[in-house]
Amino acid sequence: MTSNATQGVRDLQDLRETVAISHRLLYHTGLGTTRGHTSARIPSTDTFIIKPWPHIQMHRTNANDLIVMDLDGNIIDRDGAINGGFVTKVSEWPIHAELYKAYPELGAVTHTHQKWASMIGIAGATVLPVVGAEPAASVAEPLAMFDEDKALIRSIEQGKQVAQKMKGAVACHLQNHGMVFAGPNVETVTMDAIHIEYQAEMTWRARLIGEVGVVPKLYMEQALERRAKSEVSEAWEHYWKWVDQHPESLRLRSADV
Amino acid sequence: MTSNNEQHQALREQVALGTRLMHHYSLGSYQGHVSARVLGTETMIIRGRPDVSLERVQATDLMVVDFDGNIVESSPEYPRTVVSLPLHAEIYRARPEVNAVIHSHQKWCTVFGIAGRPVLPVLHPPTASIAAEHWPVYDETQGALDDVTKAKAVARLMGPGVVACHLRNHGMVFVGTTVSKAVLGAADAEEQAEITWQAMLLGTPEVIQHVYLQDDVAKRFDPPKPDVRDGVARGEWGNQEWLDEHPDASWVRGISL
Image 1 (cartoon, rainbow over the protein chains, first blue to last red):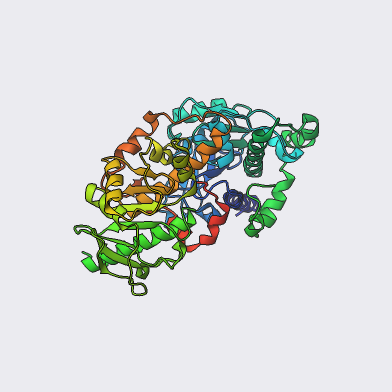
Image 2: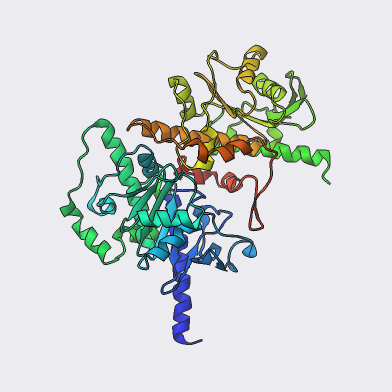
């Protein structure tokens, strides 16, 4: 094997590991338990790494539990996955495939049923940038809203509709269903999910007692510049290095940052 | 072919697991009961140890009682009976398709009963289908359902197709064809209730239209069959058995799916 090929294998294993960590962090931050899935496009290909079905606990998702699919829904590789490969694809794979098809620059997608952001969508309200320049920047621009169809996104046509709605957006409400986050890499979409959940909770709490003040865009500029350059959030370092090893450290904090 | 004895033991394990999951899903700590009909008999298996917290209940902590409240087989550690037996018994008598009943004092659903407001189907259609219809409200209980007259009245309210009932100022009843369906129905309902409550404080919650729920509602009392996709089967409980082995995991979850 040439050294380039060896490097490629190592990169792929690293990417698998990052996708697995994303699931564990979504669990530790209270954004999901079994349902919900993060995927990552394998760079320069039309294939992506994704969590399989039957769902495994997000808490114990490991790199070798994941499968590889193409954008047409074919399973390319499930050899390493749990139960010796007796797994299949999640029914909502078209969310991921159609986003990757529509936007070649996208490197990662995650879908959750996280409570606070989903609830704000159900209430027809808006998640506002209310706390901390860095986490608030995830919601500096309004989130997209997909409310045409309340069924699970199991067809390519529905996937296309969601992808259309998400044009340029960090996140999209699937009203009465959950959230979708799309971005350049796994680190960014995972932190967007965590950050937006926190903004949603704090928006709700503040709205119940008064006028909601928002973080001025000026203060979010640094974070927005990093986002424009597809740089990974600083918070990610804390989350994957410390929280993944010490999930009990989040015990009292729910989705606090 | 498994012997009657093995089937009976397996059903005991299901009731014990369902009882422990009440704790893990925040449906109760020491109050509440899961029961299962012993098929082909007028008896049921139900927790017989009021002194054991729900999360610690094992198969040996259960008893077998007939529908008149006579103990057929008591828990070795605790010879007495429990108060809410008639509720379970009268539902089994009235609803032959029901093989499991859960009675709980779960917080969020109970609040809606107290407030006289319906829990709405708001998040994730398959989960939300538990709240597709407004549940009946039994309005005369201020205490335990310890007499047959009260229990018969609840059973009358829970006619064919009805999956849940408020016991106003007291708690909830959910029924199912299996222990897993009844217990997970209660957990799904609790999630809808919490999110409905949160969204109501901001405005009028967007409700999932019946067209997205009707398939799941129609299948509710069908004979149980395994969930199979692409030849891959999922167990009856999904990942709840894992949760049972790792109850510490539930602290981060709140009620996320």
